[in-house]
Image (cartoon, rainbow, N blue to C red):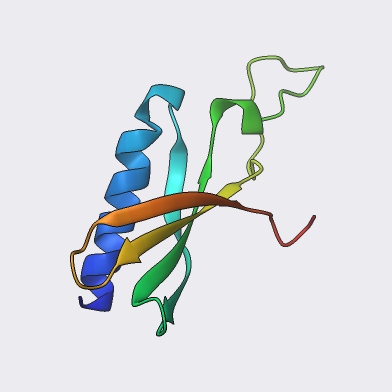
Amino acid sequence: MEVKEVVKEAIQYVSDIFAHESSSNIGLEEITFDDPANVWNVTIGFSGPWDYETPSASPGLQPQNPRREYKIVRIDDATGKVKEIKIRESANG
C-alpha cells in the first residue's frame, strides 16, 4: 500500500468507528511500518466532546485547544484491512 492510501484508510476508519461519539479534529499524528509483521502503524489524534473543558465563568464557551486522544490503527499492508485499534498515551502523560 502507498502511504497516502494507508493514512486515508486509517482516518476514515477512526471517523466511522467513533462517529457515535461526535469526534472532531481528526488528523494524522504519525505513521510507521512494521517490517516483520508487514503492518502499518498509523497514529490518529482526535477530540471527543468530553475533551472540551467548559470554563466555569462562561458555560457556553469552548477552549481553543481541547485535549486530544490518540489511537494506533494497525493496517495489514497486503490486504489493506484494519487489524486492530490500540490506545496510545499522549506525549504529555
